[in-house]
Image (tube, rainbow, N blue to C red; front, side):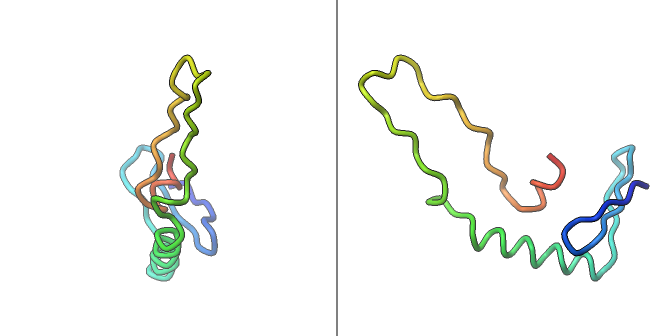
Length: 75
C-alpha cells in the first residue's frame, strides 16, 4: 500500500491497482470536497473559444473535463 495525503485526509492506494482504501473520516472529507467541486463547476465556468475569420484550422481540443472531483485525483 502506498499512502499519500489528500487535502485534510489520507488515502492508501494499492500499487497494483487493486483499490483505494481510506478511513470513514477521510471518506467524509472526500465526499464534502466532491460536493464543493460540483457546486463550483458548471457548464458556464470554461470560456468558449472565439471563432474568427482568419482561423485556418480548428482550435486545439482541450482535455476532457473531469466528471467529478475524485476523478482529478488519479489522472
